Image: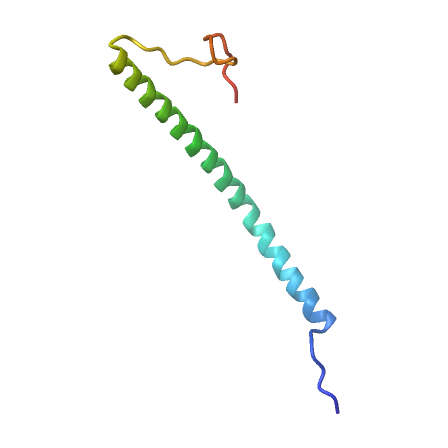
Length: 81
């Protein structure tokens, strides 16, 4: 008698069902992880900008202003988000 190799259809279906259930349970926490990561990135960008402004103020010996800009040359930009 030949020994069969491989998986039966039932075994494959059960494996895919378990994988789908695990993916469905992980999706909400993954979304939360992405939001937290974006918040951390934005916060770090702001801190880097503040450090640069402080450095430039010390180097130039004058007050430096940090503002929102859509074109990179004027402070007329609107906040996004």
